[in-house]
Image 1 (cartoon, helix red, strand yellow):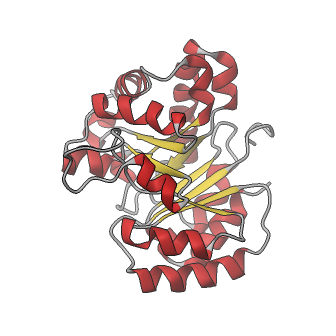
Image 2 (cartoon, rainbow, N blue to C red):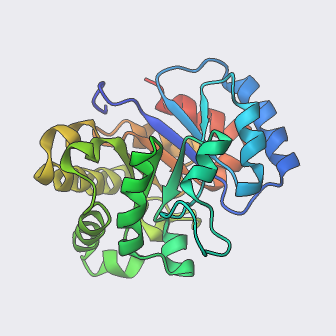
Length: 255
């Protein structure tokens, strides 16, 4: 089981799914079904258009709302981007950064992430940093090399004592949206390696940092994944689109 001092976290990444009306319907059902679940932090990451309504619908619940991406500058000539002050104004509590789809499809760089992470922390927002290897990299035995490069580069500008405030999501790219899930042993091994990398900089922060697993998490495998000692919850894609499935996953994370 994970360290009792670390509160498990389960986050729903809806990606480019759900209109405002669909988001409202989901949250109305989900908030009622989740009740006063304690023991785990629950985060829902809707599309930008649904953020204001999502914040309002969850205001009296334990659920937090986060964005799926954010820019590191407060303002400027960045067409199509959303800034941290804009999220703060809406009452949004954090953002996912570095998702493999953002890296691969939209050319997000480690340099950009190294600017986003301290900006989020400075604003008091929760940062969920995604890292993970491709299938080819795993098959070539390069998983640890890739994770080391991403962790060291992306967190280079975060002070050691602040590392515990960053949520790291290990998402093997070969398991995202494929139905193929890392075994509990593979997930634990990779996440323990990430924690060791953090400990090289600050042991106390590494012990406090929440490191979650993402990649085809569903009700059928959530409990066994979350039972591993270094896995502190999950970043959930497809299964988070169904309120009943997401309730079951959240319940699996609550001790």
